[in-house]
Length: 123
Image (tube, rainbow, N blue to C red):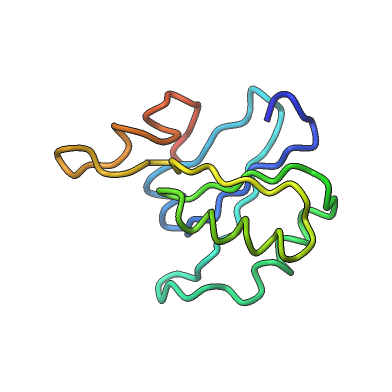
């Protein structure tokens, strides 16, 4: 994110996740996270208009797009969809915002954005 001014972080989680779990904080980079849910809450159906909505927000098809969700699954699907939509540099953050469960079945401790100590905030 810091080495390419065109790089965009796209958080594909749902609004409740953003509110209750937290969001990445890119203030030190002078950037904002783009929030576009891959699935619509509460039914968790894939948003058929995801690519069109995101294309309206990010026009540059050569910009690096970094996709983030809780654990890396939804963001992988979103990155693949945007690649199919003609974006050339789509990347999945495989460990997600909270990562997989630890030995006590808690997220956010063993891997992911939070566990790695990357800045984040609670809305």
